[in-house]
Image 1: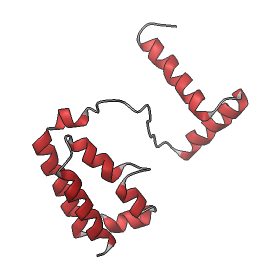
Image 2: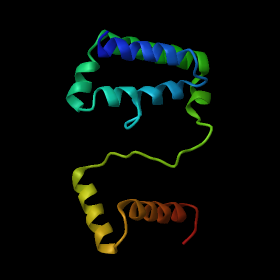
Image 3: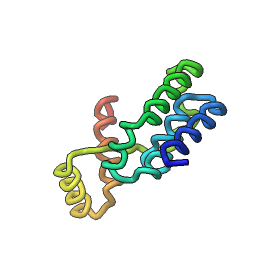
Length: 126
């Protein structure tokens, strides 16, 4: 059994036991723990995989699961993890890293502080 066939079989099995379509989505596509990220760690490998019949079958399975569980209910996790994956331009990432190093804080601390300031301004807090 090849990699693609194994992934499809795992997706089919998981789709039968999930309560929410988002659980199936995360099982497959989570950037760190998802089966697809683990099976195809490079962008080129994933690009090849999305051209396969198995990938098309997985997308159909996701759509069927979303139909069965509903989009809104399925998209609302029971508990938030606190993790948020963000892709940004390399130049912006480098600038933020430089600023964090200059301030003597982690990149995460800097970004959380910046977001907190902006959210505070939006709700009228200083």
